[in-house]
Amino acid sequence: MNNEIHTEEYYIASIDLLGVKNIIYSDGMDHHLNSIRKIYKSWTQIFNDSYFKNIRIKFFSDNMVVAINADCPMAADRLLESIGWICSHLLKCGYKPRGGVCKGNFYIDDIFVWGSGLVDAYLFESKKAIYPRIVLSDDVVSAASKHLSDFQIYKDTDGEVCLNYLKAFGGNKDGWISDIEEMQSVFNQEFQNYNERAHDKVLSEEDKKIYDKLLWLMQFLEENLIFWKQY
Image (cartoon, rainbow, N blue to C red; front, side):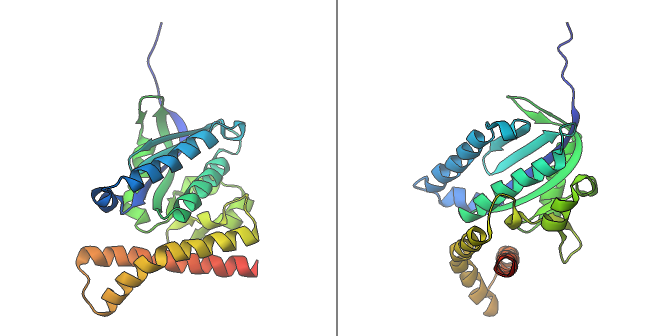
């Protein structure tokens, strides 16, 4: 009997949460430990629903892998829709998701994940995403349906093609306006603190990177708020 395991072709997303290293060190009362675990647990339960039966997900600390076998019907769309819902939820809870989505060889079971597709997705997340955005490889973009491409996929100012997770399916105009305004409120104080320091030119190189990410995020939120108000 051959018990060897093998990789198969998947669409794979590698997602992490920006700034969690500092959060972990400052989480003396374990508030964020409980908050993030609650979010992860809710999505583990959601993915048990029959609609998501082909979506596979693994959480570890501030990282997650979300994947679907490429042979599944509408595989790319289903993965991108799922990522959109997860990322918008994370942002509403005060955590900044950054990720990459690729197509490639992948293996997942109850113990571990493996494959060149996972490495590619991780490199997209760690090297290309930079900001709280989800960067897509060309083969993921080409596999997405026209409706999803027209609505959720866009080219950012630096040329990277990304998923707009603030246009995830399943919401409505008023709900998105309310959620985005709540997100703005969640991140506004943090942004203002860095913005004032930037104007006073007292930011370290590391703080400058954080400020750039917050500036991108606040602009992203405002652009999407304007979209939904005009929708």
